[in-house]
Structures are given as C-alpha cells and as structure tokens.
Length: 153
Image (cartoon, rainbow, N blue to C red):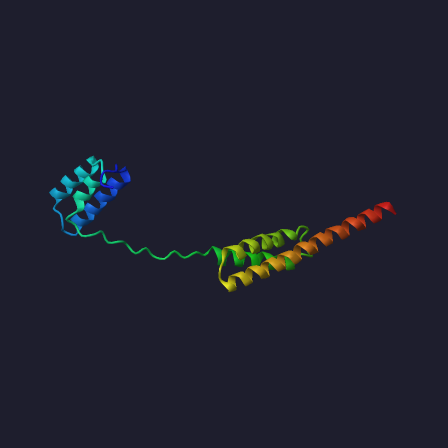
C-alpha cells in the first residue's frame, strides 16, 4: 500500500494532522512548514506516512450524536392534519385538504419513526385523515347527487 498514489484529500489530511501536532507543541513552525511542503509534494502513501511516523496516532474526535427529529415531526404533522379537518368540515368547501395532509404525513411518520409513541400518533393522524377524506368524498357525492336530482326533476 505504500506505493499507491495519494489524492489531494490524503495530502490535506496529513497537513491537518501536522498542524494539530504543531498546535500541541510537537513540531516547531519551521518543521510544520517543511513537512507541509513535503506532504503537498508527496505522490505515494509511503511518503506521507514518513512525515507523521514520529507523531502519536491521531486522536479521533467523538462526534456529538445526531438527533433525528423527522419521525416525531411527521407524527405531529399527521395528527394535526388528521384533526384540523374536523372543525373545518362544515365551513370549508375543501375540508379534505388537511385530511389528506394527515394521511400523507401519517404514512411518512409511520415509516420514519421506530418509536412506538410516534408511530401511534402517526396512526391517529392517518386514521383521522382517512375519516376526513371519506366524509369529504361522501359530502361531495351527496351534493352532486342532489344537484343531479334537482336538475332532472
């Protein structure tokens, strides 16, 4: 592996490690400049390894855990959409829109979250939205049929 050619990313990683070593007082500024120049001119891994061979292994940073709020957010949006249509239904001609939002976010919320509570909230939004869509379709069908009945007779 020492004879394999390096990439610019490999060179930058070594220069970054040299900079950290200089910051810790392990290398002088002159050594940092000299080794950095050699790192940018290096063509193989062997040349790069020689530049950091007398330094302790690089400490790996412990990244902070990434918190994913996608599942709970989608679950709450599903619940909101599945419930919002209820007071709007008698007053809003297209009350199915929030219900459809409840159905869509409910499906995505169920798939995005592994937590039982989030899934339960998503299911509530999905069920509430589904009921809203069914009622809206029935309401529209009733009005279409009554209009057709009135125009025929």
